[in-house]
Amino acid sequence: MSSKSLFHVIKDPVHGTMQFTDCEDRWIKPFINSPLFQRLRNIKQMGMTNLVFPGAVHTRFNHSLGCCYVANQISTKIALDDASRQLVVLACLMHDIGHGPFSHAFEGIFTRNPIKHEDWTPSFLATYHNDEFITQYNQINPDFPLSKEALLRVEAMIMHTEKDNKLLADIVSSQLDADRLDYLLRDAHFCGVSYGEYDLRWLLHVVTRVTANGEERLGITHKGIGAVEQYLMARRLLMRNINHHQKKRAAETLLVKWLQELAVSVEDEPLFASIKETDLGQFFINVSRYNAGTQDKESFLTENFERYSNLYDYDVLAVIRQLSKLDSDHDAVLLAKRIQARALPKTYRLTKVQMKKAKASIDIIKEKYKDTIRDWQLMLIEAPHQSYTSQDDPIWVDDGDGLQPLGELSHLIGAMSDKLEYIDFLSIDHEALDTPAVKALLAEIEMTKSIGV
Image (tube, rainbow, N blue to C red):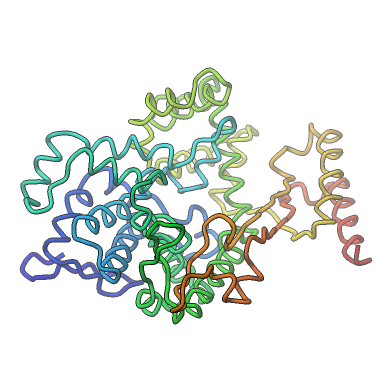
């Protein structure tokens, strides 16, 4: 950022020149420069996706800045007052601060009462609720000071609990929020695909304030129907072809299995003695106890926040590399070897009928050959997704005569609304492919396909 001009600039591969006024820069820079936000530089946005799409190495830091910029553009377009715009911009900047290593994939380590990144967010935001930070912030923002109450409103927008102003909450989290508007373009760009693209500039032009069910909300004018159709279709295609790409999902499933195996083993397994004393090792030990039901969720979050906030992608990668060098048939070691070498499973796309048949067969195979085929060597992975919902909280369109939900004005969106789509597939480790039981399973699946069942 420049300190000599009226505008401070962040060069971005997606949005180009992201400009912030001196005032806006003073709003966001104290948070950006804080250690907990800088931590996001070390957490990849798309988990293990780069094993399939090599360019997907962008980070939560990149995305958070982009989300903040888009939120500011929306807020300016709909003429929010400056105090409200400040809160929205900060909420979008900080909305992903609770992520752990490899983003969503890391959440799979929890097998009982799942803990998501949002559950950690209040603990991260609470670190800014201290007199020292607030005093320093207000010294450089005398016209727009923050209070602890204002920071709680920022938290409410992120945590979907903002009740007083749904318009502000919509910019932060909705079916047309700044988060999605940034990550669709960003993920498509870094994956090297075009089907996540849409016309952001025109969409920003057509966003507007609307009053729906007595509340002011974020909507669009009738001129924006085509742009939102393109945006929602881009979301659908990106989910189907990138987020739920079968090799990507198989890679992340291996990572999740590795995390789970290490968590249950690190405390007592001599092989892992050097890992045990690290922040990651201690976190794993506590996760194992939590998964066993010895601690409630709130206590776990409180007691493990400091360790969690110190974990980066490369902490996990360093342990994977370390274990991959061991000569052992421990599951955590074998999984580490596969991840390190990118020895991804063979994947087979399944129809719903094939999926049903495969489930029954795999249960039998795993029981009969439990001494030779490990659980993670033969997996069924289901990837349900929904692109748009009209029932709970639709995107509203101002057509000049009043408001209508988008699905009633667009045949395309009406057809895809509230539809749960599935991508199901079978994942088989390369060492299990040649076993008679797996060959028979594949033959059964192929027969189902060939006779058109």
